[in-house]
Image (cartoon, rainbow, N blue to C red; front, top):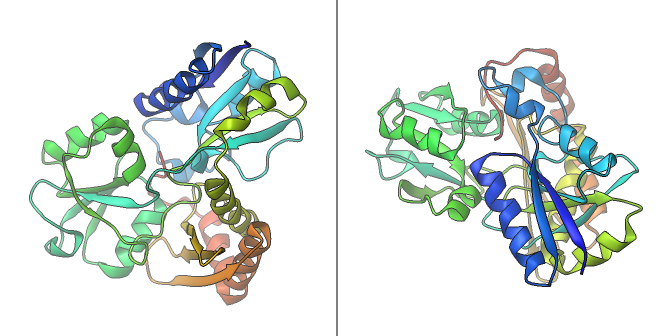
Length: 311
């Protein structure tokens, strides 16, 4: 069988993901190596990522290794992967999706609604900040960077009254002990592609693409295709306050999406159904643009917003 080299970031979660894929490939007889690659996003640890605004900050260096032939495939959190790939690359597989929702973690409070006025909340994204502020403008939002262990330590040390993280990462690492509430999509619309792993490979590497076909999950592929089409239509990257969640609904897809002011003052929402994921995402994106999303996004791109972004 083929010898396959996986490119991955070096974080605890990224390595879990790479090892998970490695295990599945080894079970089919492949020899697998993992090469750890430090990305721009990994090097920026003190600055809020929304202020950097670089597309592909967690993927650029890995794609360079892929292009040079140093690795044969890359394992990404799909929410980190830009919606437009260079023609030399392709999304070879979208794996079965974990829970895409966000979760509320706290030592002292059982739910998001129970937080007292002025409570300190740590979050890693403008998307989360905007939706928190929309329903609880009284809360104080603080930047939260670092890996999962670092973020949990900050919560446990009393630096925050609560933090908001993605359910998928905590589930994968078995670190759910501080989770108090899974936030409904109506309260906290997830990031595009959240909970899904994307496998990227060279578009002309037909042998590797063939070996990766078994990893592709049709439901996850359809749902995330709709979400990514929405993001592409809006012209947004992963550092802007855009949320999307697609799910099967009676044989079709239902896509729920939001675009929000970082301060939560305005949250635009739309929900539509359709059979074609690309068309559905584009339709919802165009509807939101027509309702004023373009003005919100222009303001976000034009300002240095003091908030971090997605891990």
